[in-house]
Length: 150
Length: 176
Image (tube, rainbow over all chains, first blue to last red; front, side, top):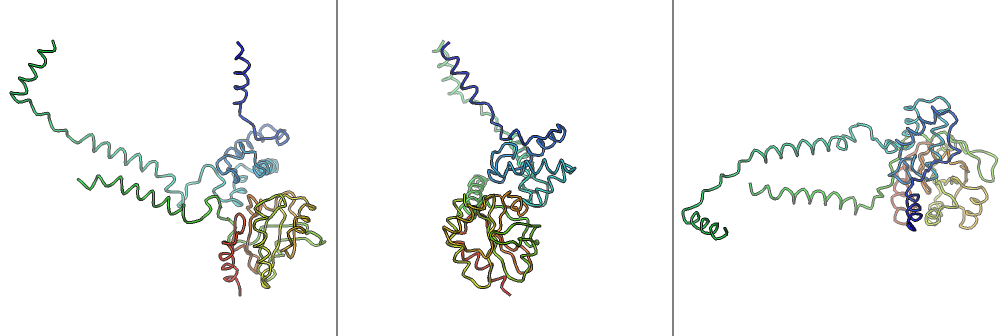
């Protein structure tokens, strides 16, 4: 029973920390929901492996604010993303667009799947040599051995 | 069919070669290419330190090559690159503009008083919005702008002594 408070403390330590500050939130819940969805798709340029929704970096904070400003001004989701891409390039999008420069990024998983499938098919078609039957002497030895065991 | 056994070795050497190339090339993998290369300077309107006029996009189209350095007094790498900026400021045909990014006016001023001021003019981007318009994602960042007001080069991170040659080459190439 003495462990219970300790377990409780550890459980609370694993709660996710929210990077977003309460004052950033928009009053309009529809706009706020759109802002959150966009934020999850935008890379934090400082951490480079987190979305700005998760990042506590100063720049992520600024970008979250800019997204909300633009949404409030009446921009569409695509227009907000274009605004950020114009400044930071496609890298700012966590889901890279399908372009000539990203063609390998998108197609390699399928290429590996197809390649793996083909080699699996070739391997499974390869016939294994039928087992050679035992010689007379071997047959005899086997009989002796199995007799001893029983 | 013997040669098939060498396929894994060849694949391994290929992957190791590519990884080794990027590891040893000295490129900063976190440095992003600028979307603004060969574009005109984005709309800018900032107060200048100790001056009543303002820094605008047209301030750069004055026929002279400008090196724009985003810095901040709170930024440690900015101190590391300061000696290189002082060196670059000795050149006659290049003017240096400093933009204090997300910095307090007083802090920016005392930073330059302490280390020396390599800049012909210093603008204040207190909110950091202008920096975002330029695609800045951290300080220091340096842009080279030609006489027509077009961004021709971007350097992410501090300009270290080994970077001077590359920057000098860009400046020489832009020289009319």
